[in-house]
Image 1 (cartoon, one colour):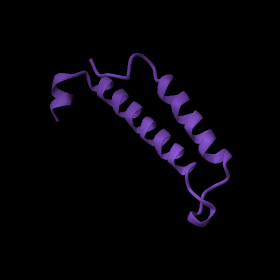
Image 2 (cartoon, one colour):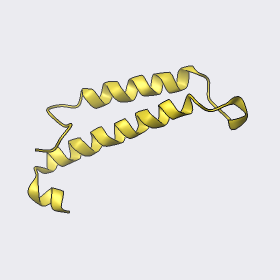
Image 3 (spheres, helix red, strand yellow):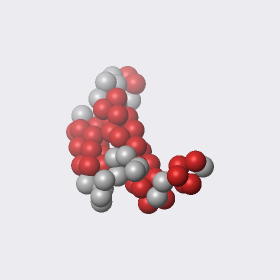
Image 4 (cartoon, helix red, strand yellow):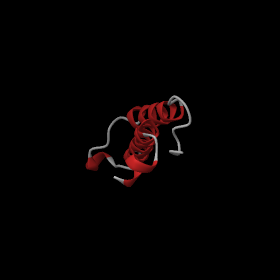
Length: 68
């Protein structure tokens, strides 16, 4: 609530998008550590996931890494 009052709403949305993509990049990196008995996906899936999330997060329009 405070962020919407004190910052530009577009910046808050961009920062939120950045945070979600970083979160999913970490989740994909964690999937790399799963064993076969834990139901790990093919090794290429987490790699593509990490690369995709990081690429999308750092190509967000403008400076969306911190709402100013």
